[in-house]
Length: 264
Image 1 (cartoon, helix red, strand yellow):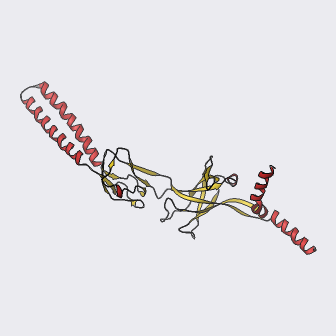
Image 2: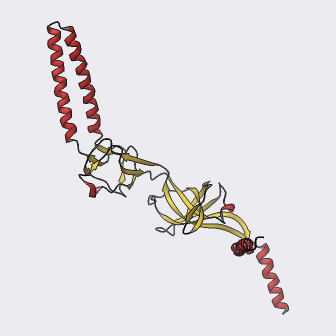
Image 3: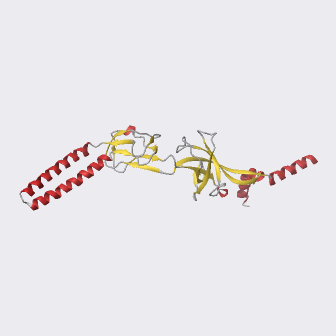
């Protein structure tokens, strides 16, 4: 009995006074901090699709898709013909000394030139490119070849691969222990053996519901980058909160639940 009492007293002292590092554990998702939305520049039809979700694109060089320009080409040819006719009419009017007619022909020529510039600008934009290198994260359009698109319709989204963030879903009862500047580690489901350090940058002030429980989104900055890291990857992250006693760590959920139920 004395031995049991001593062991029990020792266990209580151990739980109360021996401390260890406490980590707040939560699932996370890798998100891109910068995305570029590529939209249809004018009303047309989808002619070709060269890239799909998951493809890496280079800035300004890779053509993701093209729009039909047959109608614009006809309008451009007509505008060039009008310009040639206006220039010819201006030349004849100048030769004959008809200043008013020459001025009118010159004004029409300027209108035709502006129309040509606009049509050429649209035709050049028929090739959908991204001014930012990255990964195509939305835009599976292969099944929509020939479909009509309207100006402003979203065709693709491209995310930068060198600017990712870790978005953790921290349970409501753990949020009070989290602070900006805390560090930790995360591991993805695809590479569970690779632990990547992180630093907490921001805590969203409003809770969200996930799996029927309140969570707060905590955004953290990865302190290392790997070529295999992609937006949408998931896994588990652990944030080092500080040193806590074993008793506090093992009983905190029960204590919080009891205090809520008994209102103490």
